[in-house]
Amino acid sequence: MHDSEMFDFIQRCASRREVKPLLDDLLHVVSQLGFYHLILSGVPVRGQKLDQLVELNGWPEDWYRRYLERDYASVDSVCAYSAVSHAPFHWKDIPQLYSGTRESIRVSGEAAEFGIVSGFAVPFVSFRYWQSVVSFASPWKDCTLSARQKAQIVTIATFAGGAVEALTFSDGRKERVELSDRERDILLWLAEGKSAWEIGEILGIAEVTVKWHSRRIREKFGVATTVQAVVEAIRCRAILP
Amino acid sequence: MIEGHVVQPGNRHLYEAEFEEFLRRRHDYFVKQKRWLPESPDGREVDQFDTDSATYILGIEEGQVVTSCRLIPTSEPHLVSEVFPHFCEARGVPRRADWAEWTRTFVATAQRGMTRRGTLTQLCCAVMEYALDEGLSAVGGIQETYFLSQHKMLNWRVRPMGLSREVNGEWCIVAYIDVDDAALANARRVLGIDRSLLVRRGVQRRFLGTACSLGRR
Image (cartoon, rainbow over all chains, first blue to last red):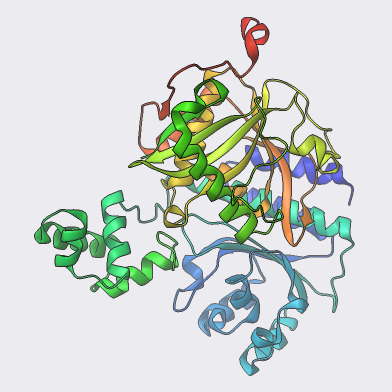
């Protein structure tokens, strides 16, 4: 692929107002690099359901359905490694620790039946999820990329991801939980194991006020306990572990 | 919410302690954590671009420097022109006084939670406000590809100068962001504010210099 086609794509990205044309355009561009399927999604971390996180779905319909029904996100090594890598990677370079499990090998075997054999993934920062990833799939056994092609696909993925971020936030949908500075401070102290009384002493506010804020935090995350609120906050990176 | 203090040679004496803290934090992050540079015996990270041409934005909250960055006119020697010119293969290295190189972005660990209204977004808003105030056209430079969607989350217009490439295991790209009223308005809308974040104390020099600021576009 010539670089100019990549820059033209980036320019078109900036003017997209809808997700579907962006997906079609992206699929068309990366098909020149040998990738015919892709998914752009928040990376599910333990227990999160994939369908709540997918932004661009360019997977074969049947495969996507099966993947959701059988909760393959919880065992697929591409998913698991996407949660820990900041750097782009070839699926084949995923460490054994992730790719060597029996379940993961089974998922890759089944994916092959749908023309998803090898692939390349590009993670990027997210403001709603643990992090996001664009994963490109090829029907070939080995989707070898030259250094230039690798640079092209990383650049393409980055701007496609950026366009999705821009679209998502500009139309106001999927507003994620926003904590006030006070709520965040309290959550950080709760994560440190401090009691409401102790936090009140540290922050110089009344214990009842701390409890009131804690309840607000739990309501915002839609959970029953403080522990769950801390976990949810880490999952979406409102606080870091 | 941070206060974005504009620090230059003319008012640096007002920020002795804060500036010292800023250099030590840069060392902790860019040298110790990221290993971009060799360790410095005095525990401060200073490079050849920390000259009198540099303007710093120090984000201060409750007396602490929680975030910071450095701006340099691209007409002067800067990181991209001296070290990464090959990253600008598509559009060439920008050399314009009204295009500022934005580098050494840092957010303190405790503030590094990634929320839309977080400290990084506050710094971005302060930088955009400063750039607009000073009549700049673009800000940017070499940055980690991983974080590029931060700018897009703010609905900023981002122009790549070339392809993303790997530098010591990290993927980076040279890209510049258009400076305009809409970009500042978008950042403020995300933060839910309609006021300035900048604080200018003491003597301030115009970023473009007198000659340029007279012929402001």
